[in-house]
Length: 345
Image 1: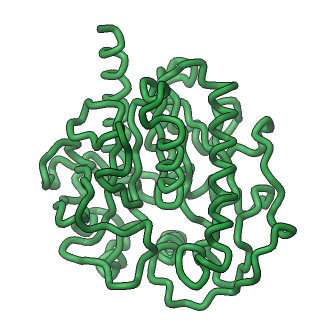
Image 2 (image 1 turned 30 degrees about the vertical axis):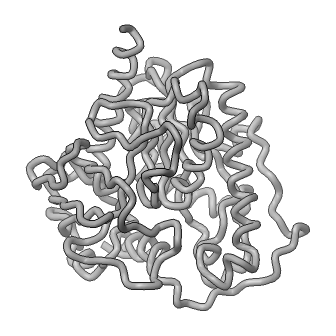
């Protein structure tokens, strides 16, 4: 129980309001952490060639037999209000343990049975960068550094590992934000879109006109488009000024139903395939959902220990992937199979 409470507190702290004053400093190029070299496996949080039990325990199919690749970008984990760094250090062992033990284990694992997971370590921006006055005083430049790492990792992946295989792009929060940039630069209206199985972009805003040719997927087997949602507790809405701009919602966006994966705007609890909890167990039939005005509303998850904490939380952003872990896992496999079936025809 103590372990759960600590992890839950951590996750909620990442995505709650930013009224807190953060330690900060002038942005200086001389203080930018060392750049990752993606030729080295040490610069990948997850990679098929790494002997990494964190992700390997989730593969039920031999990695070499998986038909697709998953390029996954993890969310903001650099959050301490005492840390005045603008970008994370990819050579910080403690930070990298957090990436593996939280993001890789409880998020990236959702796609492990659809494809081989590639997840680069990157110099992500500190959480404060998403709020003024920090955005203007260094956050934007820090964001350029973060995306440049993601971009370089993706280019290295394409040139050395992909070999024409179908690709799932997946990320959450800051990770999903960088994934949008990858999609615009490498896929949207370009030849590589023919290799796109789907882009899973929970935890960030995706406008209807975000892309030129990549559209919201509205059926469970569709491919070559995107899926996106932002989760709040049932009947709760964000408080004004409490969330970063790129986590915003409302109007002009299509919200994916991450249980039925179709145009329906609700899903009942019997349809929910499973939440992955921090005891490493999957809890099916745990939530029902409604989609309302740009938000995905979820009921308080049933069946898990300590769910009374979740009754106190308005924003379920931290659970955008975990709550629908099994639903994502099964849907990603369906899309990969359909991608191949369409290719044969």
